[in-house]
Amino acid sequence: MRNVMQRWLLGVVRLVVGARGRYASTPPSAQQTIYFANHSSHVDTLAILAALPPDLRTSVRPAAARDYWDASPMRRFIANRVLGVVYVTRKGEGEDPLQLVREALASGWSIIIFPEGTRSQTGEIGPFKSGLYWLSHEFPEVKLVPVHLSDLMRAMPKGKLLPVPINCSVSFGDAVPGAAQLDKEAFLTTARDAVIKLQNSVRG
Image (cartoon, rainbow, N blue to C red; front, side, top):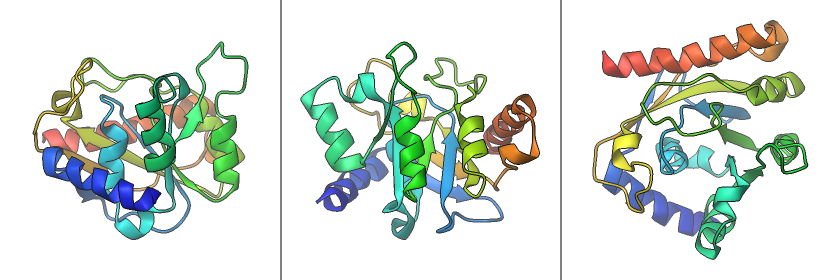
């Protein structure tokens, strides 16, 4: 049921915002992966899923904030029954915010994550929080693939309920070194720079 509803919803997303996939020298593969991306709208997760090949999509789950997606019956339905969201808790909610993400990775799922932790209001990519580093440190065998989403902020500005038809693209880069090869600051800088590189290639 989830796959049927997801295919329908992603078809609507492709129709409205395009969500064309652009790949670097190495396209996405079946290897377990953490896809990490810039964050600018609530369509971001759907755009990444829509841009992935269908045979890979079934093994990918997005990590998303519990306080947003569990806030209403409709959001909860989409998160649980359509997207298969792995909930992330905000700081101050009294538990490890990434515990469910760790459990999903341990079970073999690939994950979509937004390391900025919040949506950008300017289109610029903010500093990455340390969660991506700790996940890579704990799961060194999982590939890390940068993703850049272009024009999604214009397609669905903050506060809007429905997306505006705009042709957006989803750029997948080559895998970056894991946390075992770099200290935390160097790793986070390298990961962020990989997304910025994709952003510059789209702008150029």
